[in-house]
Image (cartoon, rainbow, N blue to C red):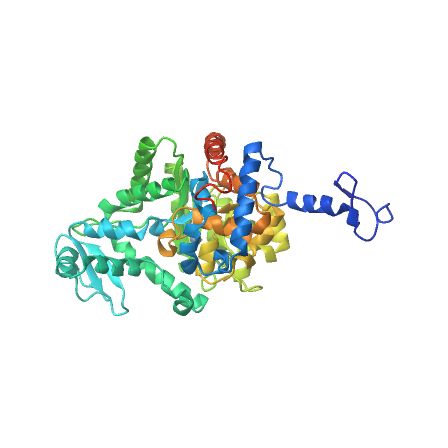
Length: 509
Ligand SMILES: [Zn+2]
């Protein structure tokens, strides 16, 4: 039986020990303090300047929580303009957030840039499909017709004929994102949301996989992250084959090298940026033998590009795809061959409790995953949760993604609230920012801090969450240490330059 001493320390005693059977009301304050100390950031000691900022954040959060329109309780597409007006959000934007560890390469860059930059390049063709979507391709001559494209327009010519090119560009943006003013009507269920989500991936592919665009695309993605005070990226990518104007194609190695060059250029231009790494992904619709081949290829790529390749993952909707255990022969290959390939599995992105898919959480851990993508189902698996905690396997929490894909509507009910209050290893990420409109990490930090964490999440929580993103990254120990030092400097600057505004300072009212 557990008892609390006068000093607020939990001690374990046997039955019959001097310990009251009923809780002691005089120990209320100690119990509250003890419980708070268990949450993420609960053991972080704040400096006087941090304590001051924490008090201000608490005051701002209380105000936000008391408003009838509380952003975390609403669909993100409706909440976004409110979040953008929030003084907490303004502070989160300035906060050094460390690394983004769960973003997919085809949804890295804002669609505004895709439309205003990429679709304005020469030789860009567009077609309108029968399901009221569009496809793009760059081609020196008239492009090949495909099953979904029976006529291609040269975009430059088509745009010139438009009476209102701005409205036309807006319609292109609509095609490239999931945004709608009526999300509950457009996405009434998980099935509908996922169907539209997967279709959207195809729309941008003709733009992004054009070889001359890829380097600029990656560079722009890093620029957008840095603008949101992010200093590191781990990108999940299928290493798509890129194409030239004459239709010739490059292989996966070309993608890896281009990614490496774009990163090197970016770090040269911005020495405060730590770098980027890739988690190679394949779709869970593939056969076991193809996943086996992909695993062997990833091992080879990691040995050829140890600085770039972090590991391997399977992507695609868990609920309608094959589960991890189905692929065990492929995923156990490295261990059976005495080779190493770190895994970063998406697992537990489901609310179908008790199904085979629900076991992905445990199987990810059995297959020695380094982190768990989403882990939405983790709080329902006490043993898996203990194993993850003991093995320092962090969960990559992507609140807005979970809401847009309809696992949860009011983010105050997100199961990660349990993980946060227990101090489970956790990092915050954005999953598919171009599709959801949650560029950077500030929107997801807002939802985790204000919605999931509630009033008890404090500046210590934010500090630990940001530090976690370096601590649980795939960086080798010496770079992790250097990265953490570097992040701490940025954090201290953030506190000293934002810590002294009073509650009534303009912009914080
Ligand atoms: Zn994902």
